[in-house]
Length: 305
Length: 259
Image (tube, rainbow over all chains, first blue to last red; front, top):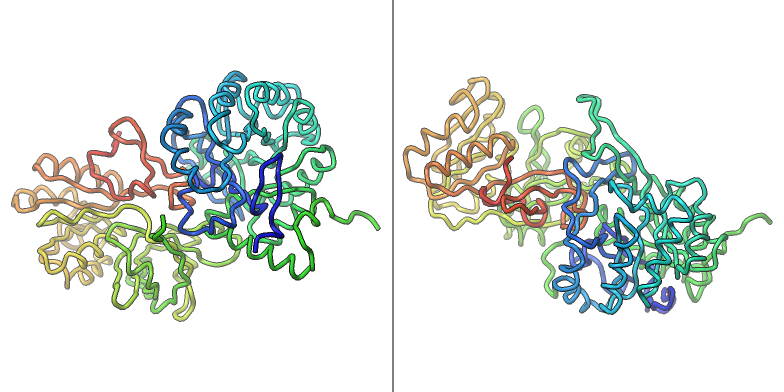
């Protein structure tokens, strides 16, 4: 019954185009009471670093109009614990596992790529767009040259498909996408969160412990959609679209804009069954539109005429 | 993982009444969640399909009747979410996700429940679930306007001790002020507390000095309620961290980094 939803991404077969976005789905196990496994195309696990990271101090989350700010700061147990304790458990799910990798310096990304190369994960998502860390990460993703250099360093250490996760906090996202494509990226995913801020008018202090944080949720959807559309026209590699997708209709918009698959993030918090609900909605949409496959939607936005 | 332990239910609102100027009691029909809920666990409430406010609200469970399939929520109106909840009508439906988190260990034979303000809500569920075992409660409120708590605990608690910040009822001060005299009786085998963090810290320290272990129910801002978003991380005494939503919200006092 998933035939129409099947897709393929950089050599990875996906049962549906719906991917659980990094940082919103834990290691996958947290949502299995709510989501049908057959509806999940892939799971991108919480951002991984070489060493364990405690994350940021102070308040880490603030609700904003139709969205939320977070400054988690890449809290994770480190790659060794992931490989020894977590991956053996989640590999049994028969859902492709994509690992989101992060670093302070370029060598950290190369180290993680090598450590994960033969682990049995489906792909790597190179995070050069996390806005919540003091060093590295987003700094690499806002300059085409460093974005390309990190991509090349990862590609040199792994045979796994490499997805590069792009930041929306740039003037020209297509330029960054082209740079990582030239450096060997197999796909790009976007958008990561938009840097934002909230201030408490009673205390006159920033709401978040880290002062600024990443904005996600329906509030960012139009910006994300525009960037996915621009990127899809600029590169030949597949684009994974994300940013505020909460419904099947939102997912269709991203497919029409040129995304080959989409990721669901903040919507999982609001509706833990979001991925299953969206899969159901997509099947119904294909039926209504008399389409055989979601691939018939990809990039088909009608501009002009 | 074969057996589901957490559910999303569209719960029918059976009643939603004001207990004081800003505290409400809502009873909903939510059979799966009511069946599995344990004292100290919580639910995440989605108020509407609208995008704003976006996120679910965590609320402690104040009672669950597995036979009737009902869930009781007692909440204080503090923001837009709880304002909307207070306005919800009987007969409408409420999106409830749960039961979530780790509840209280109720194995100690004689429990003292120490609750400040709305922190008494999960302790009411403890008292009801323990009944007819002897349980006592120390209820702290701001003023005698919060007298309704003593009514709620009357059926399930052997003794009800009261403090108010303004002295309008019971001992003047907080729960921590009234606790030493109660502990001096030396008849409790466990203390369970929920309320403001400074109060819980004091309660745990006083109980420890009296040789009694304390369980605390922590509160933190959270988005997911299931351990995925990592917004609700709190420091642990072992130098590591815990997720309030998944590892808690109930912890042994000695697990918590109180600094």
